[in-house]
Image (cartoon, rainbow, N blue to C red):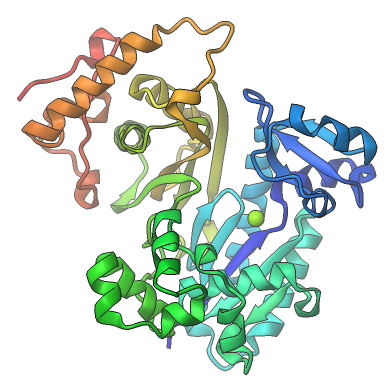
Length: 422
Ligand SMILES: [Mg+2]
């Protein structure tokens, strides 16, 4: 039987800040996005004051003064580094893991049968706290979707003391009942609305819904969701229902890769794919993070490294994102390591139309956005990769991408990276 744990750092950015400034402990703290002055992280004290995620800070001035809320700019170099330390600690417990976002990882505990998993969860939490200073919640269950639900409850309910094992509890149905349908992993706002119209308001009702009906309305992913809620795993590590809050592009390589040039090709292709994803959802990203990971089945030489950059202006422009991704890659690449996986995360997503122009922005955004449009159109009508970036690799004998099916559209501002037309 499959068993997964979701390890989620509590109020991650705020917790990172508290590690290095203990005066913030117990005080209300908000971390801001630089560009638009919105709250991107809130301490529990702030959540209780009903200041929402993404709230523009100028609208909350009164509360900030009245309650003495500490307001901090985000420090992604710090968060990226702390994230890496947490992952390093987790890898000691279970090398078989998926780093899902900057503050969440899934561990596959399927082969740890016979252990008391709640006790294991507590050991994980205590060790992460001791070695990094970051508090975490741990949700354990037979599927990733249920582990997410367990983790959410573990975080909110003091009684769980941060760990809930749903695979081993008589409160299983109760846990599903108190999980609103919009809080289920993989249920978007649109589907949540639709499900409510049909009287499905929580995870238990969705689990017990008529599968044929859900399949007809939500497709195969809806069916998978029901299966997952029933405890039958459909998403192994590295396979997820569409993430909504951040966009991630990552793949395991067909073989280990040690050469920087090959990693650059892979990273260019992810960055391109990521920019396409952003554009197709009319989003821009304010922050991106690149990571490299060695073979997780060889924990003695396990290496996970990440580099995060704030983009000077939130963007979905391929050349800008590729440039940023490649410079991140170069700063974390270690010679002699054999990498098994790499990827890119986008954070602080905002709508394209709301994107603010930076004061020192030198890019002609109108023009570059028209260019991206034409690229996407050409690739849509003539086939993926009709136009692509030269840095994603031009030779027909690229050996790393055996598992990437996404060669992406491309354009560049550099002579050595001109788009090719096949
Ligand atoms: Mg978290």
